[in-house]
Amino acid sequence: MTAEFTPEQVKLQKRLHRNVWKAIDDYNLIEDGDKIMVCLSGGKDSYTMLNILLHVQHTKKYDFEIVAVNLDQKQPGFPEHILPEYLDGLGVNYKILNKDTYSIVTEKLEEGKTMCSLCSRLRRGTLYTAASEMGITKIALGHHREDIIETFLLNMFFSGKLEAMPPIYKTDDQKHIVIRPLAYCKEKDIEEYSELKQFPIIPCNLCGSQPKLQRQMVKGMLKDWEVNYPNRTEVIFNAIKNVSPSHLMDKELYDYNLFKMLEPPVKS
Image 1: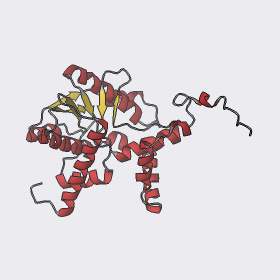
Image 2: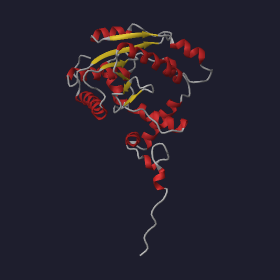
Image 3: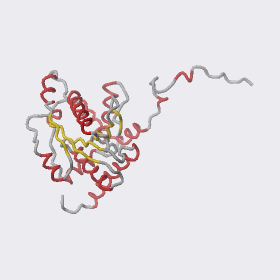
Image 4: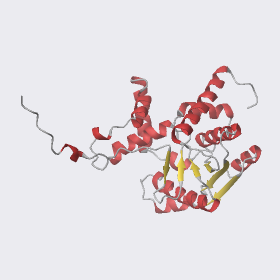
């Protein structure tokens, strides 16, 4: 967008930049010498992540390399020309991975089951393999604040565990570090920023077309809460960052044997 930003648009951009910088500082997401794989799906979140990480790189506070990576899953109708043209225009180093995970998902999935879990596992495996081959030190994903909250509620309501999405973590095999630079960013801000920057959005019709997705149900529930109890989303997000293990019931996190025997009160 070439037109001058309005004062509100300037505030929006500064707010997103500030939130990404805060996440970087709070969780040590970026270090000198990093080679960061920025996973680009063609959606608003990953475009925003790439845009802001390029801004961070431009400030030269950290000396790091960016490689934008897109996984072409061979979904019918996927406009494979859009991302290369966009990235060429930016002058960004990029790599397109070609793997027909679409056929695997549609062939193996039982009727009525959601595609997200299997699709996500196949996608992660492909990206992790590529990261090893490319000498990547960090893999950046575009999950934002609402993604983290929704995952927390999904795990609590449907999986019976308290688990969300950390801003940084090591994969189970300890081979890769995954970061989420947009962890503090609101989805609403990202939507507005995406429209402002006129990113060439590529919709994902693979999972978004499925009815009764649990994540969509939780997203709707959060919206209803915000209408009736404003700022609930912020409260839940703060709760994820303020955990008291001794006030839960996980014996792996807290040694409840500490209370096995207390000294009886001394009688006067």
